[in-house]
Image 1 (cartoon, rainbow, N blue to C red):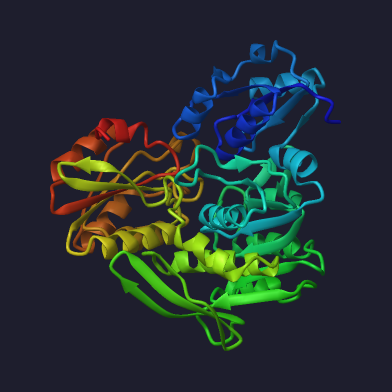
Image 2 (cartoon, rainbow, N blue to C red; image 1 turned 90 degrees about the horizontal axis):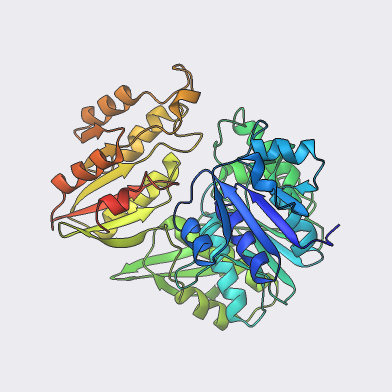
Amino acid sequence: MFDIKKIHFIGISGTLMGNAAIYLQRQGFEVRGSDKAFYPPIGDMLKNEKMFLYEGFDRKNLDWKPDLVIIGNSISRGNPEAERTLDERLSFMALPELLKYMFIKDKNSIVVSGTHGKTTTTSIISKIFTDAGKDPSYLIGGIPVGSDTGFKNGGGDYFIIEGDEYDTAFFDKRPKFVHYKPHCLIINNIEFDHGDIYRDIDHIKLEFSRLVNIVPGNGLIVANFDEQNVRDVVAKAHTPVASFGTGEGCEWRIMNVKHEDVLTRFDLVKNGEPVVSPAVRRCGSYQLYNLTAGIISALFYGLDKSQVVRSIESFQGVKRRMEYRGKVNGAPLIEDFAHHPTAVRNVLKEVRDEFHGKKLIAAFEPRSNTTKRNIFQDELAEALSIADDIVIGKIDREDQLTSDEKLDMNKLLSDLKAKGKSAVHYDDSGEVAEYIKSRADADSVILIMTNGSFDGIFKKLGV
């Protein structure tokens, strides 16, 4: 199956697709790929690799006769390259299948799942195992600070990967995570998301329950028991469950949290016995969950406690997650990937805490398949209201939505103003940038939230 030399990626600028393509090219495969656009940071990474890229989709992009076509999960029937792949009976598969058969194989697969925190937790665990000399393989849906890629195929016995619950491809509607052969499964939280493919929270929990059911009995499930939905999906697990959180019912408890200037200190206690007491980069409660999940998974595989602590204490984060991008009129500008009301709320709280006393200007792009709908209409308003001054960008591909399902922008602005906030909306990102410039000064801080490029807003802001 894998006697191949030439691989074509349709939808190559997705984070996971791009990282995998870069790795394969570095390994000597001839790799090409196409996408409708190439946004940073993945687009820049692909170009820096001098990879042969096609901007836009076209049947002729396959004239080079690849041995294998990888079809991204954003690609639908009707895509000209997908149609040619089917018409000519070219060998094709989804990225999760490629990972399963070419990379994961018989390694100990550590799968990080949940609605929030997957990228950061995967980055933390990858760093811990790398620092411990385990030479792990990993695939991260982002780029850790200090690294130029989120993918590595190491020589060790571990593969660490994000377990995304989004569907695999148009020809495989199962969640991506079912392909990853989890030996250690982390479930940090479960909320309703991906309203384009899931009916409700019970539908999502069903898929997580199926994931739980494929973890072997000699593996481990690391589960956040502060989250009731997580408790529910592991209730009938046939695999040992390491529960963690702040509550008394957790096997591993996060205790004695103290924020001191740039550091956060906490104790991690197992069944009443202290295990580690790290001092990490200042963070909120959600990051403590990420760090704790990483610690537990590392200790399960026998890594040294002191080495684990050193690793997490030196963890610098992930690009596009609370990433400092520069200043606008003297105001620090922070970028974050937040695209769900819970993530929006968490990151706004963290910025509020870190820049206490400064006016908080928040720009949000409704781009995900959930937030551009009215599923979380009220929750989004509540989350954004943590900021003082809010500017909302264009609803992505709103022409594909009916008026009954689309986010009601007028109501969102009205609700924010009723809470005493300044709130505006512009379809043009240049106008969003100009608004931010007009409001920013040295006594403010700016937070840009998008899981895309916000149509080049950072360049328009001069950072």
